[in-house]
Image (cartoon, rainbow, N blue to C red):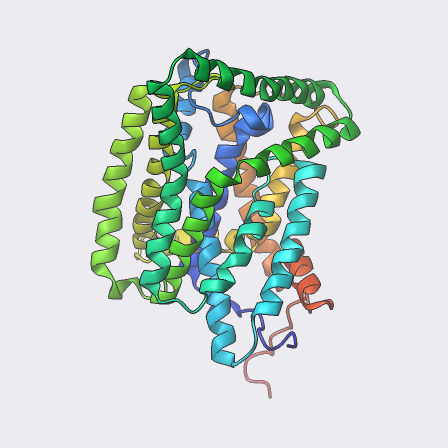
Length: 416
């Protein structure tokens, strides 16, 4: 297969709604990850911080309710869509796809491993690469046979947490003591990470990150089902044409907006009513039930967001916003990695050293400013180049040869 067999889509051939969704997901992921930049990664996302008050508590609650767990699922959904779009283009061209795709995932795995160990241990790319490979087994499946297993796989994570919570509820104190003992090394790791990120060198941080990446991978039985499930649902949406021509699927998008979104909000409210958060290392039946509902709400609200965002981006009022966000989405890999580089240099000791010092409300302001700058940079970059820097590296390594980077100058109007 040559580089031209699956050439990159020209700007006019791209789906601007899909790129705008990627851009929106980047903002959500940055807002979600700020807690893990300013504090220890493994302890982030566990709920509301009871020590916060005023604007900090409001921002913490808004991010937890509307963002946490909703945008990594959206990113996963979009990954599945991208896989299916590539697969369909290869099929239409009559070209082989499996070898190229496996090489592409292998390169992504290397990028994710380097990112997780050398830059920031909250990486999602390594898991995406590992879980993306099995998608080849279902590339020819019809939409329904992608969506149904996807939903079932997504439910594995909340189901496992719920079963764990129920087991705790009916067991004696011995099981709770065993869990507390099991969590003790994790609590020690979080304490060690906090010390190193706040006061240590880059080399010390690399050693801690390597351990944290291994811990993250050990959680794949739960998180893996969520991610792979969303991959399959995204692939189903792409194969059905729902994202390319949403006007053909009015009942589906009405279900997303008026069914799944309100249901997700209600489930998330139930989760917070049971317990709004827990200290890291603490787990009991009540916390487990709240976490299971929170995971379920993440998927439901993610699908609701898709329904509302597609309607917004395809409306006359929202088309301009979609065009503004789309370049950031076209450079999603570059922008995701750039967020980690900038934030670790701001927060960690080997940079500016603001670890644990930025108030929660200002974290949101910082994220919004950084994202706006990324969108502007993406516009400037893509006016001159075909790919973002990391997208170029990813594609060149996949095809085993450097790919053309600069845009060709357009001939002047009226010239031969």
